[in-house]
Length: 307
Image (cartoon, rainbow, N blue to C red):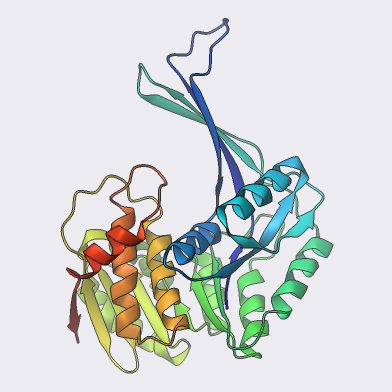
């Protein structure tokens, strides 16, 4: 089984108006609600590929009820930890005439130590041999060692942890020895305190980390992905396409990799699938993720070079 953890799912409320007229009533032309979150998007792509996963994380209040209800209606399996505070909402106001949008955000919910403990207890119940994807930022009320603690707990049960984080949370999580890490090239540069511009540099700089992790995947947009392991290293290059939006491409990449590895596929096969998923997601506008049909078409044109 695959588990994804989204510490703080967000309820996105998008409203469209022709134009905002101040000190007057503005009629909403179109409105829609959606749920956002790194682990949630990964679970969506895994479902699109035909797999199954369970989403863990915190939800609270009426917003939390709506978050869970929407995901259940999408066919996403959830096992959230309830908190007393209200889940975060982001309101996007889009003006059609001016092609402008404004984002309003409520504060992150307060997460109490007892609620962190409740989530950690769920993490302890993850069955052995599973895959767990940790990522995103650690909420302000949680200790930066949360990822490291989760990895330490899960490794005792031979659970393979995939870490996709940044800065201090990433560095501390790395020290705990996850199964796979997936920074982008800028995050990798911050991890090694060096400005990294080319994927060729990544192959050498990443090798020392193989003492702590089994697999390292560094993404660099249209330039492709560097995959480093003890068995071999790969440069995976996507086909050239017209990019409409890069939102969610990294999460789609992670989903493809984890899906293939969980099915017993090789690291090389997982990289090809991941790049196909990430590339397919860039064909769509906004935060619309990849489709299985696009993934299969793109997958045929993905190039892979072994180092």
